[in-house]
Image 1 (cartoon, one colour):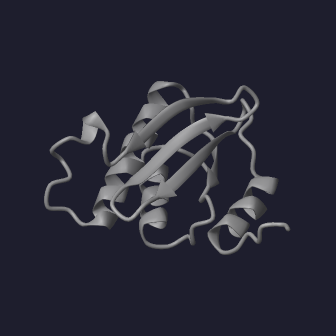
Image 2 (cartoon, rainbow, N blue to C red; image 1 turned 180 degrees about the horizontal axis):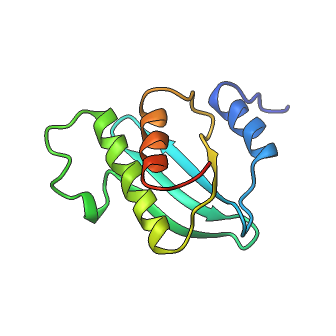
Length: 119
């Protein structure tokens, strides 16, 4: 009996059919949990992660005190944009990973764009 895939997983599969990280345009994948938000830049042809940031990153240690989750997502977006700029990455394909594009996901994307990423 086949397992039914519903909700976010179905949206995730639909998105991943269309989006893939190539060396010219890497994939910026975002994951949101109840407490944290994670972002990573992936080259799917080689299967490697080139940059990653999250609310647990050492670079953001102490800066997130007293902020709400949306402000934390903005800080992670800014950090991932800065890390990509250091590595010479300027174009990415945004993979929202099945999450609806609003709130924390949108805040992270907007902050990454302000930091210099194009998508």
